[in-house]
Length: 87
Image (cartoon, rainbow, N blue to C red):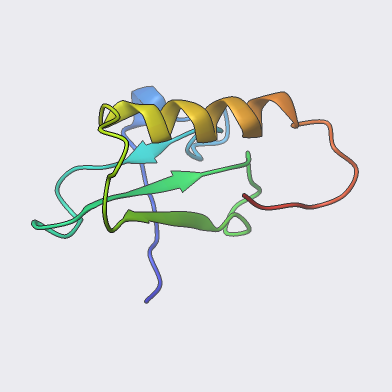
């Protein structure tokens, strides 16, 4: 499935595009599984792909926000990377 992400004008950057680190974890996900969509990079219009994280089983009893914080920290720390990568 493809997802087109948008944002409120107050949350957009100067060109009207959603900012780096946008996380969608409510309203469009699976009601029985914890999942989130994460925009890992700032984008030109139509060039960024959202990443979907799906937690099938939580054996560590982490808080719901922990995976979001980890993913955001990793991508924010590597903004200046010259090679593409994924986590």
